[in-house]
Image (cartoon, one colour):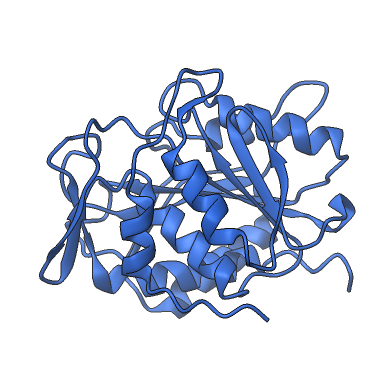
Length: 260
């Protein structure tokens, strides 16, 4: 069993580094390389390394995957930074803040075996990374039941929300009910935005005609204060990270282990 000895703040520091692509391939691979280093000794295997995505899973048989967690790693900043700001961290956190959350869960082995994790590029423009992921999973004949897309958001900050659920689409009534139950049991302030700014849910939720069917999915976002793409960075509350991480783990557990 792998145990993570790295704190979230350490992971955030290590992942708040440059990552760029030209819409076809990564051109600055600092964050790609750091993710690979961090997960090298974990219980996860690099299933796919492509021009615009990394895909990891604990089980190598694609038939055992039915939940996708996708977190984009491209950024638009000229200079990445992270610093302490009292009860917050300040920095260029779109989208290193949630990259650090999912890698923390992976290093702690806190996700079910049926979860496959994707790190994608080109999210800021054409979602080329998400499209690459869908094509790879289609070739592997993966049948997914749930998609969780991770990002930071300006929604919910003023309400001191620990998380924002945005762009939910395609869920059956029972799954929707279970998600609401999880939100209520978390006893945390939460923001719900059914139709928010475009993100990769718009692509995963639509699928690719003739190959990848529309995926029931939502964005689980970490609220931030400031201009998300601004060089001055944004604030994220330190107190939000643990409940955000816990809810991610719980939502990803809604689908039954395929081995059960």
